[in-house]
Length: 239
Image 1 (cartoon, rainbow, N blue to C red):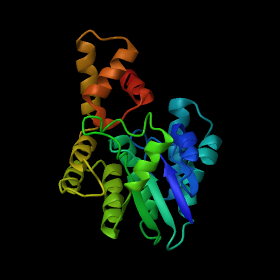
Image 2 (spheres, helix red, strand yellow; image 1 turned 30 degrees about the vertical axis):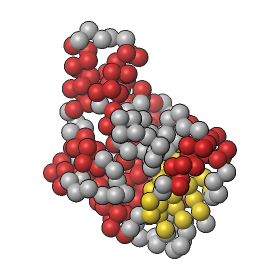
Image 3 (cartoon, helix red, strand yellow; image 1 turned 90 degrees about the horizontal axis):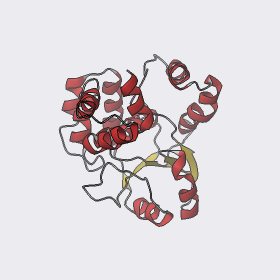
């Protein structure tokens, strides 16, 4: 089996047009925010569904059908299956990928990371947004097969992020890894997630910027490493 995990629904049509072979799953989560506790996978998904319901008003059954089901499909892979994780460089996508790697850690599948390889360094936090089918093919051709150590690192990063273990996040992200470009920047952002985004918002507002669209664009310019969408920025404004 060949399976592709896309970072969101916005990329589905272009992926289908690319002609790349394989089954498609969609990651519809934002694990960078909210409750990520749970002693079991079932409890974890229940806590996530409750958070999404409280914050965004979504029915828990929708979470189970459209979100949790996609992750559970990963648990059905076999040794030798190919799993391609299409995740961007910034923290939003990194955390989702770390979670996927924690699920895949002991399943024996051949796991690849497909990066947004078409980006320049200056645009590194922009991800797959605005890509065309030919861009996706370029990214797929640049995929990197993850070693067991890579997968273990991703799983460890997920566990330390869940625990909000700042020191461990900094330690794990300090060494360059070919499969995880910009990991140091992302790890530092993860370690400061409880204070840095709110501080950036406060700085922007202190400069007299009060229109949401302007605030959002300025936040993306100053703190693009977080990869926050408009929902996360709105939540910061109302926190």
